[in-house]
Amino acid sequence: MSAIDTLPPLRDVIRTHDLQARKSMGQNFLLDLNLTAKIARQAGDLTNCDVLEIGPGPGGLTRGLLAEGARRVLAIEKDRRCLPALEEIAAAYPGKLEVLNADALEVDPLSTLTPPIRVASNLPYNVGTELLVRWLTPADWPPFWSSLTLMFQREVAERIVAQPGNKTYGRLAILAQWRSDARIVMQLPPEAFTPPPKVSSSVVHLTALPAPRYPANANTLSRIVALAFNQRRKMLRAALKGSAPDIEDRLLSAGLKPTDRAEQIPLEGFCALARAIDSI
Image (tube, rainbow, N blue to C red; front, side, top):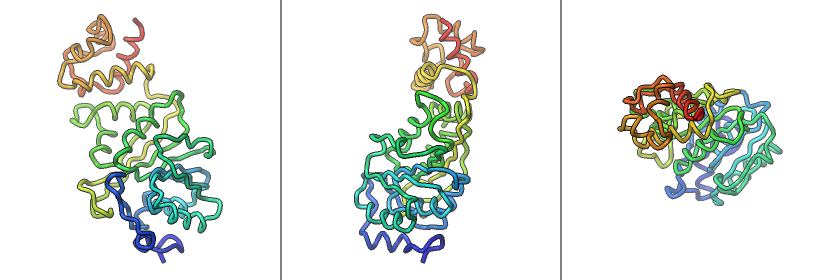
């Protein structure tokens, strides 16, 4: 018996179904069900929400989400080996869990989800950042999700919440903080996982804002931020010289110094520059 439901402990599940985490799929399994339930609680009140989970593996977090009262969970799992274990969870929670055997980068799950929708995942390391960027840059805002509760390598988590002047401050921080409130809510050591990764992990909770924090065209902002941080050691007037014929004037009109570097510029400054460039 586990501490959160009547299903077997995860170590027994892994043994029964011969589930060994595969490095090629970015898999590291959390086996402590009390810990997965704690992560699920970081997602907030789930009782009236559908939850999207990417990469459930043997279902530790899935069980946490269901035990915490999620209205319904859609779990997208690429690894077919995990499906029998997930089917056992679906049988224990009738009508509450749908499992989709697919690559999360290649499917649109929205047709089977009903708002409000929260995303909660121990993301596979090899696709986590790409999925986050997609969720932060939809064509329309507000997005389909009301919150994201995601586990990353600690280095990635720190990039999401980084502030100007920090060496980890960059494009990911701008994208996340422009349209959401982002904070680190949990830290997990390598030994919490099987097999233990070489790095520590963190859970980040992002709450979607109803509108971006500062006005700016999303495409322009994304373009200038990418240019600025791709050459972060250069002054802005050099890093951004291809973005406008009179970039120094545009920087000055946005209240920025052409001799500043990208890591010195706050989110508000990048948004002001995006507006200045679009005024050409």
